[in-house]
Image (cartoon, rainbow, N blue to C red; front, side, top):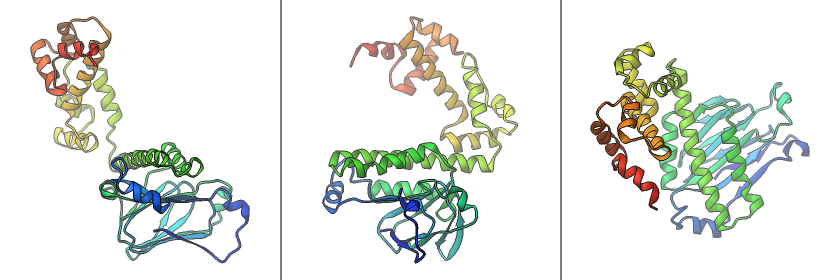
Length: 307
C-alpha cells in the first residue's frame, strides 16, 4: 500500500489544509471482496496531496497504484529510471512493483502553491482492476503518460474523496466503486486520444462531421480517404485504431442511429426513411437494420409500445 513520508522540513499548516487520506476499513474491505457489484474492482485507499514536500513509496504491494498530477512538479523513480512528472501527467504502477514518487520544490511552484489537489492518488484491486491497469499501461511509457488537466477526471476524483464525508456505508462505497470504474474508463479513452493525436494529424472529428452531413447518400472509402489526404489503407488503419470499427461500418452505424430516431419520432414510412438515408432498396436497408439491432425496422417501431 502507498506509504507517505513527509520530509524533515517544517510545513506550514496552510499548505496541507486540503490534504485528504482515506483508508477503507478492514470490515468493509471484506464485504467489497465478495459483493457481486464490487468484488472485481474496489479501492483500498485514496487521497489528495496539496503540499510540495512529501514522498509516496510502494514496495511490491499486491495492488495497483494510480497518481494523477493536477499541478505539481515531481520525480518518479521506477524500473531503475528517474523521470520528471509534470502537471497533467498520469502514473500507473502495476501490482507487485516498487516505485518512489517525490514532489519537488522549484521556483515555479510558488505560483501554484495555494492550489489544492496537486496530486490525487489511489490504490485499487480486483480482477477487473487487473484488466484496467493492463489496458492503461498499454498506452503509457513504463507507467507514465500525459493526459492533461481534464475537468472530468478531477471531478471524479473529488467525488471519490467525498466518500469520507458521506461515510463508509456499503451503499456509499458501491457508488464510489462505479465512479472509480468510470474514471478508469475515461482515462483509458483519454490516453488513447492523446496517443493518437500526438502521433497523427488525422482529424477524426472532421471525418465524423463529413459522415453526419452526408447520411442521405453513400460515401465510399475512396472519398473518405481522399478527404483525409491518406491512402485507403492508412486511413482505414488509423480510423479503426481510434474507433474499433471500420470507416464504412461506422458510417452505417450512424445511419442506423438516424433511422432509429426517425422511427421513434416521425410517421415516415420505412421506405421513405430508407431513401432519406441513401438506400434505394428498402429490403436491403431492413437487412442492414436487423443485422445491427437484431430486429427489423417495423419491429423496432412497434417495440416503442412494449416494455
